[in-house]
Image (cartoon, rainbow, N blue to C red; front, top):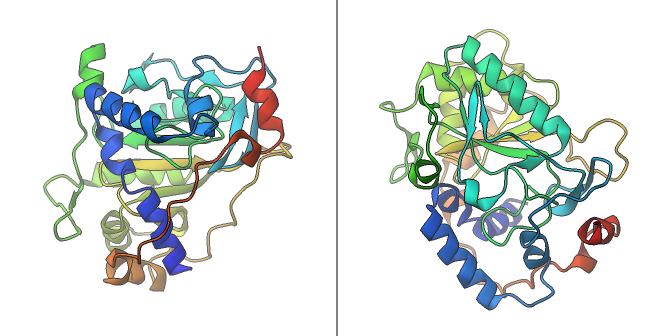
Length: 300
């Protein structure tokens, strides 16, 4: 299982950097990917659609193999949030995700966070992305930057070039006390307290910092899961909305606060050892996705 996790991590290795990539860097990565992908790759099909499917809202499949019907866009500007990297057109989600981000942004202000800078959510019809994430396919994932929203509206150019700040000294894989703050921890906690949130992915060093300092009821820590990267942002994942039969949840998080043996493994050497070379897997095609995704893809 650990080796499987590492193999998946290597697949996702570019994601943390791409999350902060500028407009020019993103376009270069997309051009490179397009040149190497077969024409029937699902990421080319879904990555080339600019509008949502005009169907009832539905998350279809699993977080890393699915699609999204009836997506809605998070407005690029709100009283307590701004959307970043607008050129990617990834500010789409299931209505439940958009509603969560809107209320989470307001709750963040009440604990002293000026406002959210929201990174990638999903594409207009979900599905695999040409660059970056393996997940974010069913409209229930969102990246929130650890950089607070400024007290002015950012220009489109700024949203393509500004970078968040790392919370981790990546050379040593330790928390950076110069950037990690109690307010940032309170923001992650606030997200974890929302009953619709299933998981929040953060860098292992961030999880350790939370485990070391959290007081009182620590049940919320169980949702905060250590994962590769995630030093510039935290990744919020909602559970499948009630009554959506086609949506596949992950298993529930283990009991406890997640600060024991599992975290110890992440803080040791094993997760960072390179895996043996493996033959690259072919990219997903439309046929590899749930059957309903074919309807989502062609809907007009």
